[in-house]
Image (tube, rainbow, N blue to C red; front, top):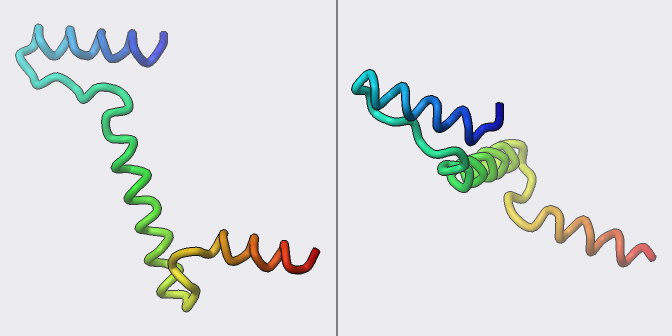
Length: 66
């Protein structure tokens, strides 16, 4: 069963039982990615590492070595 079929089945059950419908699949994905990035930045700051530009800085170091 695909995620779309499961969503439609859950929505049907919710309507029959008079409950609120579940959120559409993928609706909160952008918020989840944003929270994960904030979480990684927070832990970087706590560990004493720069919170932003770490990948760019590492890439710049790697390219200078060539």
